[in-house]
Length: 252
Ligand SMILES: [Zn+2]
Image 1 (cartoon, rainbow, N blue to C red):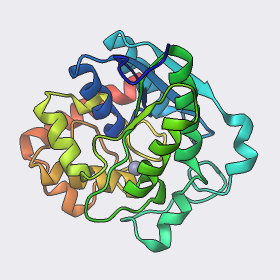
Image 2: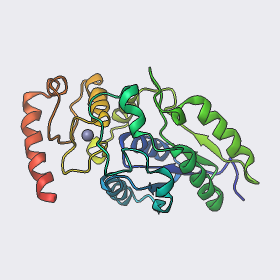
Image 3: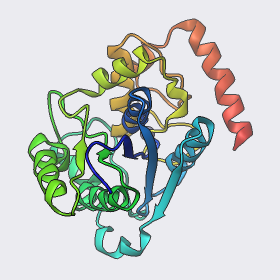
């Protein structure tokens, strides 16, 4: 019988750094974690491959659900439409809406809640985060609280929506993960699916800013770094980065 006292948690895990941190946090809490990833027609499969390999390494059951059948409903986004240009630079009102997938988190949470009920899990964990500016409406506290209220009554047994970083910035999430000893080389953030992260898209720039705020060099290789991001790369790590660039190319 599913119930909130269940130790099992379904973690929505994209392969990115926020959900990677949420996944590890649940594991470190002793939760019996089931990771759930969605293929909703992202322009590349890179982060989904990372998600699968991380779960294999951790011995965490991982389910990848193909929801591309709904692509015709949600294709008006630069994230899901290969024919559209990916905006570069920092997120602002001008280019942000280009990367919004319509109703994304409500769709994904709804499916994750279904899985939770199906396996008797009492909790769905996901990596919504806040900070100084919350850009996406479905990452805001009012959305998560309303979704939680629905999840509590939509089935015979309540499911809790657990968003541990709802009021944390990306830099704070990273700080928590670094304190847990996590290796962020096992994450993928870039909206482009190239061998190396681009360093230019809004997602890369947010990631690099979070590492800069923590005074830590990102272990990922980048094909190009903005001057302010390059400035945080120490000389000795620049050499290591060239090494990892070379091996990343070798891996294809
Ligand atoms: Zn990028």
